[in-house]
Amino acid sequence: MKFRQIVLLGLALCFSAPVFAQDEQCNTDFSLYREAFKQWENSTPKYDRNNISPVMLSSWRNVFLNCPTLRQTTFVDGVKIVINALILPTKDKELRNKYVDTLIMVYDKRAEYFPTTDNGASQLGNISGRKGIDLMSIAPDRYEDAYNALKKAIELDGEKSNPAFINAYFGSVINMVKNDKLTEDVILDEYGRLMDLVDANIKVYTDMGNEKQLNNYKATKADLDAAVQPFANCEDLIRIYQAKFDAAPNDVDLLNKIAAILEKKGCDDSQLYLDVAINLHKMDPSPASAYFIGKRYLTDKEYAKAKPYLLEATKSENVDWAANSYKYLAQIMLIDKNYSQGREYAKKAIALNKADGEPYIIIGNLYAASAKECGSGDFYSKVAFWAAVDQFNKAKSIDPSIKSKADELITLYSHYFPNVETIFFNGFEEGQQYTVECWINETTTVRAVK
View 1 (cartoon, rainbow, N blue to C red):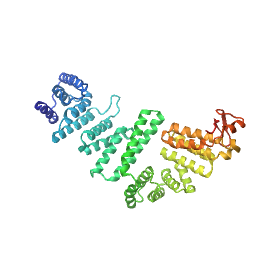
View 2 (cartoon, rainbow, N blue to C red; view 1 turned 30 degrees about the vertical axis):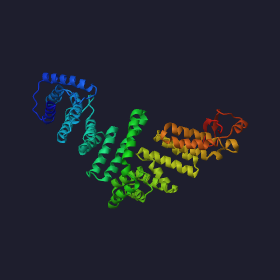
View 3 (tube, rainbow, N blue to C red; view 1 turned 180 degrees about the vertical axis):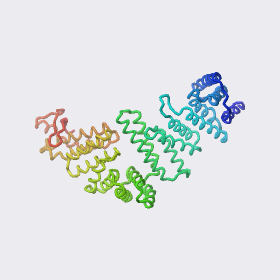
């Protein structure tokens, strides 16, 4: 045991030793440590802390110190060796902390000697992100190091950031706030920024049909929402941002930030939101500022005031806001009984976001609302409900998140289907194709009320 401790301590303390190595010795040491490492990694239990090979440790150390450019594998294996052979078995706090320093060194040296992948793409963000995640897991007291590593990963990779790094980074931000290293508003600022990254990737992978990556980013979105909840109720948001707004009511960047966060968290019924939106539109009129004002008027049911702003907002570069604006306009058209225009707006929303089932819900409601205007009598005044239910079924088929809402509407409007006798006496039968005329002009299936 004493021998093992001396070997392990030596590993941590001697990484600054001079570099004297021959290629032949490097290859020999690499082969020795790799053979011992594979046996250790594949043993039962994996990475057995009671069966650590001194040959593996000393040979790996020699390669790391003297032949850093030999193989990237040295650093990948090195992370596992340092964590499982040095950090985890060690109870002494001071010694464990030195081993954590060694782990950081392994990651940093990998970034220095192997900054790109074999195809030339930068992997600095990936290396920094993995370092941050490991530090959060095995050295929670090094939360500031983890935060810096993960922050760097997100800055380097931007919209291509690994969802796991996004999730971990947000956790590190919260840790920094809890330890009084950052102010609470940073949590909300970073939440908004990270959600933009996540939403952008959800759109990309939805369009690509990549279910695995899509699910990864959707899971991260859910995790971010859950993590921000203790800091993101409307009362707290308004408390934090009211002071910032009062101090700089004409700061366009700040106004954009406040409006985006309040909108995203459903706090757009507040006076602060309206004040911010109006100031923003005065200072820097744009589709984005129009969106904020239009949504606020929509919340107040001032539809006539909302409409021109929402029409302007459909030109927003933010695809989600443009799509939402078309949806809101479609809902206003439903209220105004301008059914055809409402469907046109809903279809434009669909074109911008094919994964959103809500526009189909709106179209179904437009069909149902116009049923009596598109026919009379016990049969023809009810055929529009078939087309409406078709839309509700389509909505839940592409967007499982609204299944419950769609099912409620299906149950509601299925009660308005004509009965079997009415269908028969009008010369039709169940299962037959039928074209609903009027403005709807949809082919559907004849169905009887159950």
